[in-house]
Length: 266
Image 1 (cartoon, rainbow, N blue to C red):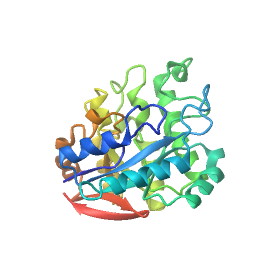
Image 2: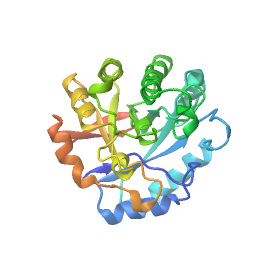
Image 3: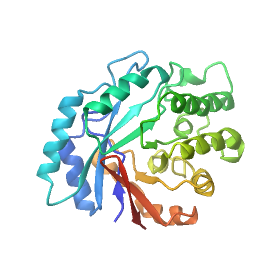
Image 4: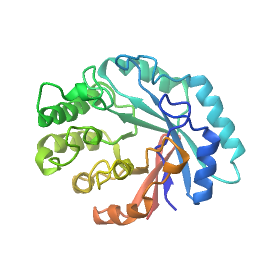
């Protein structure tokens, strides 16, 4: 069974879900396991405290959850870091202090603005906004590469003025290829995030063409997550995942334990 290794609980600023409720829902679905990856976005614009979390309380809470579900569901301890270049040392210190199984690096804030909000797109074309987003990934990776997987690398299209109506891998292939090659050179993975289906895009994040290109370039690490913030979103549209991955050249998916990849055949 697939694992859902990108999900959020009430430790994240945008979720009210009790960790136990998320684990119980995953157990009922018969998943192979889960990894909880709550948000830490330091220096979030306008509301700097919105996506902070208490690392010690988070660590304690997930360890208790693991013990409670020991005989029902494997649970890994992860985190999703909202990357910005100036936060590199802060995040290095955090990872040195806590024994995470899995670390997702993500771009949520681009040069002081979150593409979730319309202000990010104001005064320029959608294409310019999307290109700046992809360029910011390269800036983040140059400053900090102590993550395992880069999350939803085309996150920006969830919220653009036209979402993905005018978006495709081909339209942005030059910079996307540079992102993929950089991640592969650094031994980093990407994810198939089914949140794109939940947002009505008709595709995962990133799109199938990007997943395929990552594999063509020699990328091997591919994790699976629904980006759930509530129990009902866990494993969203996971029935589509095996065929998508196989069509992109994968015969396995990846989970992490103690920051080491484990490859599980589809």
